[in-house]
Length: 141
Ligand SMILES: Nc1ncnc2c1ncn2[C@@H]1O[C@H](COP(=O)(O)OP(=O)(O)OP(=O)(O)O)[C@@H](O)[C@H]1O
Ligand SMILES: [Mg+2]
Image (cartoon, rainbow, N blue to C red; front, side):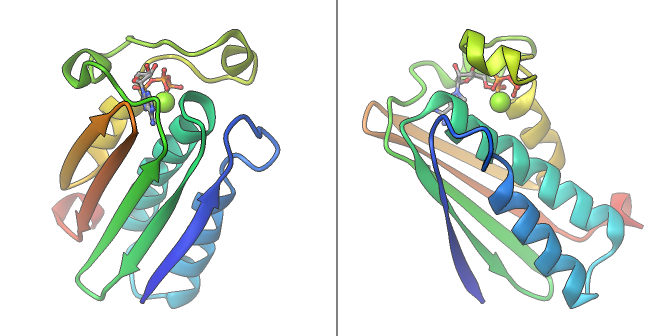
């Protein structure tokens, strides 16, 4: 099953919608441990919010299999110039509006790294692609 969900830049009312739709789907399947669903959806939420507050917009896709879940997030720029720096705890370029909405602690990418089992990030000025894979493991029991 592969599904797609649009993510609109700067829209704080819709921010998080893609990840909550995913959460609803995963819960309804009753296949996965609760901790696993929380882990997948927390990482999804961080990546979704990053598209809302840092990019011009994009979308996510989710591929749900019995043994693993793959999430892909694509946006149309402006990209992350220095990924290593962006991964550092506390590093943030979030705008004032993003801060007023409770974002911008500089923890999102770090959390995604911790929460996922495999993460790859590709970024150019034309856009950023995050790919995450989640496998059910000991920490989900
Ligand atoms: N999709 C993206 N496009 C462009 N820049 C991004 C994107 N995602 C992250 N970044 C850059 O990486 C930095 C770190 O991202 P991270 O998610 O860790 O923190 P944050 O979004 O600033 O704050 P938090 O996630 O804690 O609310 C961002 O401040 C931004 O500069
Ligand atoms: Mg973030």
